[in-house]
Amino acid sequence: MAFKQRVFSGVQPTGNLHLGNYLGAIVKFVALQERYDCIYCVVDLHAITVWQDPVELPRATREVTAAFLACGIDPKKHIVFNQSQVAEHAELAWIFNCVARVGWLNRMTQFKEKAGKDRENASIGLYSYPTLMAADILVYRATHVPVGEDQKQHLELSRDIAQKFNNDFADSIRAHGYDEAFFPQPEPLIQGPATRVMSLRDGSKKMSKSEPSDYSRINLTDSADDIAQKIRKAKTDPEALPSEEKGLESRPEADNLVGIYAALAGTAKADVLRQFGGGQFSAFKSALADLAVAKLGPVGAEMKRLVQDPAYIDSVLADGAQRARVMASDTMKAVRDIVGFVHS
Ligand code: TYM
Image 1: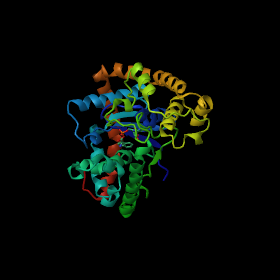
Image 2: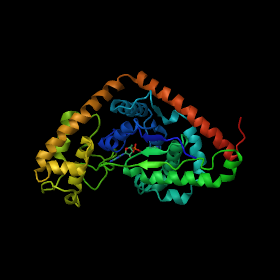
Image 3: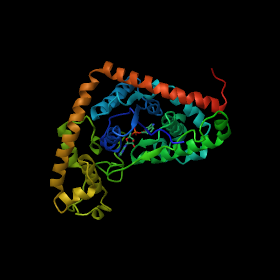
Image 4: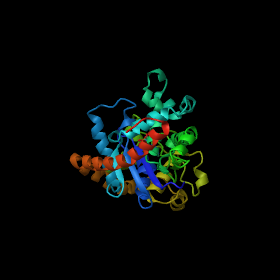
């Protein structure tokens, strides 16, 4: 069966949103609104796989929502909500825990990185995190998932889970009159020059919320001065910028800054190098700082304005959750039939 094309993606409400989240995910979310029905979720159930302060979590949830809105996501035409308000995510995740294999989850590099050396002490939620991700996507039978490069492996697991569910329950799916491919194979959308934005201090490390140095990242709520200063201080090498992309090989910091410029300007790295190649790094950095401030300044200002009105944000989330619930409960009714649960 041809599935209705639908976009789903999520962002965790943990710490500050940064340029990696913006270029790798949120900018794409905004663009996809033109062509698809989109569902964008603040994944608070995922956030608590590591400890979250219960006083801080609602603030962070509202801040991510504010970022979605400030960047131009339209919560009337599309759906914006927080995950814990739609219980079907957790319900389907349980069923997927019984479909996915331990061997599959053991291969997940993000778990290995996040659990670190003290794996015995990691939460079970952190280990089964990708099955909840699969449930997020498949409870809406979403077909397209915009994410940064770091989520690729989780998306592959979602595809494996969808396929195994369809195979394991093939007879029951048919017996209940559903289409053979009950769940679609969700397609990751990982494109453009900034699918993996790197730390400004170390071009071999991903820009992340958990990196201790704030100079490693640009936060969406940073002031213009902070943005400019972080770019000025960003690590580079002594060479001038090359004129062609090949010249960026084995120059991770230069490659990263050129990628950031291209993504912010909506062009390709080759275009950026055509303009700045051969010139001094300092001139390029000051152009990059101007561009970053011009793009991020208004977003940060609008986020700050929106978070002043938590009642409005909560009403957006409640409305989105209500509409999401209708779709999710439809899927879950069918899943209960297929698995063989007696239900009313
Ligand atoms: P999270 O909250 O870590 O990140 C949100 C999005 O930002 C992208 N991203 C980056 N992109 C480029 N460069 C970077 N340095 C960078 N850092 C983060 C992430 O790839 C992501 O797209 N597991 C997900 C949230 C999630 C989800 C889902 C996503 C839960 N359920 C279902 C898609 C579909 C996560 O932790 O993202």
